[in-house]
Image (cartoon, rainbow, N blue to C red; front, side):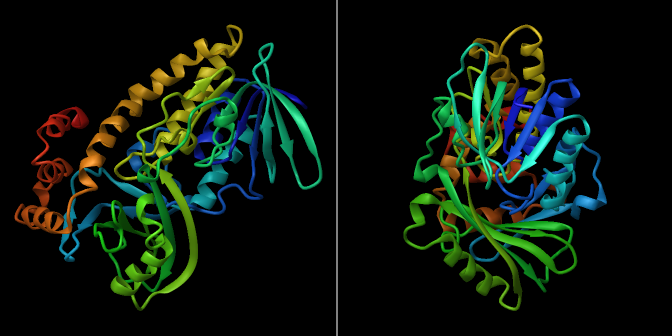
Amino acid sequence: MKHFDMVAIGGGPAGSMAALTAAKLDLSVLLVERDPDIGIPVRCAEGVDVKGLSQFFQPDPKWISAEINSYYLVAPDGSKVKMLSGLDSGLILERSVFDRMIAHEAALNGARVMTGIEAVAMTEYTEGLRTVTLRSDEKEWDVRARVVIAADGVESRVARWAGLKTRVGLDDMETCAQMTLANIDIDQHAFSLYYSSKFAPEGYAWVFPKGRKIANVGLGISGNFAKQKTPVQRLEEFREHYFPETSIVSRTIGGIPCTGGIEKIYADGVMVCGDSAQMANPITGGGIINGMIAGQFAGETAAEVLSKGGAEEKRLRIYRKRCDDRFGKMNRRFYRIKESIITLSDNRLNEIAHKILETPVEKRTPIKVLRSALLKEPGLLRLLPKLLI
């Protein structure tokens, strides 16, 4: 079959949710993934909140590594602030299983799923169609789609082929490295975020438990600092400092654009989702749930506009509005806050930690932490009630 209502490019949570949603709404769908296996390699700390995930799927032990009920904020001097508030409950996923599950559901609902297939070109929108050129190890061929979903990750080419601006400045690109460490002695029901200019300038390091004495340990730094010392080098130093007796069982590298989102996420016959649209939270870098929300909105929007005609740009504006109302506006506010937080000195971070430690643990909230961090930024302080809402 070479004609589809939708071709979704990228088999991560965003692309697979778009395919699943559209297939459930009776569109003919093709989902293609460049890598041989959906969900591999894992370039993610794998944490999500239960409330966000439950919009789509009920948690299943098959793709859950750990359950989270608290977290720690660790200052440069090693002060650990335990937090109970601001997190209903969390999960650490097994992304290789979770991502495959979504694609499997899409296939069960009628989508055609193909792996090891790369999109190498896309034509202009002509007579209500985009033509996408696909390539495998053996051949190259064209498919036609009434709408294309660009969910091909940070390095998205599909969005650029559609004429959308996706360039990220060095200061907004968090370059990341992660290890899975074994024999690590941590709280198995809490994740930790470490702030230090020594190990993660204009970023942070993380420890996400994944079961008995195993965890994802990584860090992200502003691209401005990557030339001085790579994230891989900094992560090795971080491990040696905090977890010297651990074993490294896997490694990965990647990048997270923390821009608050690209200016335009649609064009004639194209909608952009997930990391391709830079939808990660600019403060935390978390993007799984936002990507899935956008994927669902893209699938619903495609079904809606195609039932009335074509997927011209003017018809797809509703997709941007839905994303904006759900998380886009909030991400842009978070970006403004991020710009102030990343420049805090280690001394200031230590002061904030010591102040929060004076508060009983049950009364510590993310808003109190942010208020302390933004004490000299009254304009941003006024944003906090909106973020709470």
